[in-house]
Amino acid sequence: MWNIVIGFLFSFIIAFAGYKKESLSLSGAISAVILGTSLYYFGGVFFSAILVAFFISSSMLTKYKKGFKKTLEDINEKGGKRDYAQVIANGLLGFIFAFIFYITKNHVFILAYATAFAAANADTWASELGVLSRANPISIITFKKIERGMSGGVSLLGIIASVLGAGFIGVILSMGYVLQYGISMSCLKLFILCSICGFIGSLVDSLIGSTIQAKYVCTVCGKYTEKKLHHGSNTTHMSGIRFINNDVVNFTSGFISTIIAIAFYLFI
Ligand SMILES: [Zn+2]
Image 1 (cartoon, helix red, strand yellow):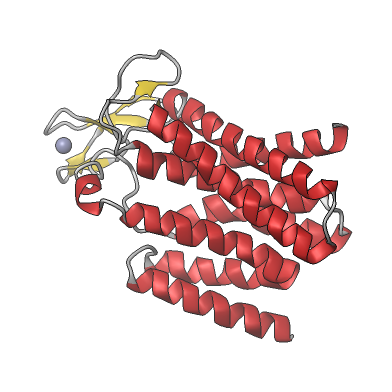
Image 2 (cartoon, rainbow, N blue to C red):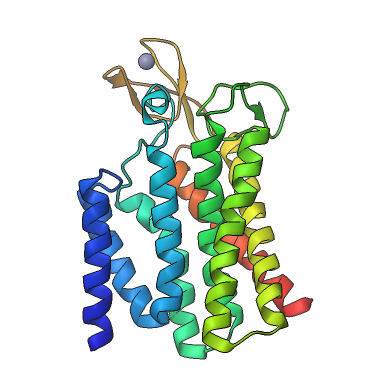
């Protein structure tokens, strides 16, 4: 019972701060409290630390050079405020694996849990820092230059940010693991697998983003966008599958990265 109260209080404080700083919309803040409370209940301080590391670092990077990014919000489907769909897209896998770990106590699910956030973190760091790259990104499929802020584009800066984003969660994971279970070779294994698979997740994200994610063209200004509305009028569907938006892409790439992490953990 106390675990729920403590988890709720901490989640509430962090989500409220996120709401005040406009990192979360109201629906995003409410879902974040639910997510945070359940993760604390299933995985304690250790699991919560990973969620907090993801949330705070991503929110800070979103705020970084905000003025410049504002011009790109026209293109990208989501702006700086995270709504409930984004919280679910990034947090549902974590919720599922935290629950399975709570039931089974099998350490492979600690890795799966952390990898879900490592992939989300790698993707967020890559998109928040990658758009600041001076050169236009290239498509991960055709290697041709594409518009900044569009999903599926990669740049050197974005790739470095992605490796660091996944590695950051890997560090928190291994540190937490040492504190919880003592020092062992497993800490190193977890760090490596979480970082690599998180990074793979962000590549898969770009791959799906540039192929089957829905893209639109604005009937007013003629720009390509991921938004269904631009300049107040409906955009025209151009390519990709209509229901595959940014959140679906994030969830799918997170899922693929955790499956790879579990396979590596069990078979290496
Ligand atoms: Zn437009």
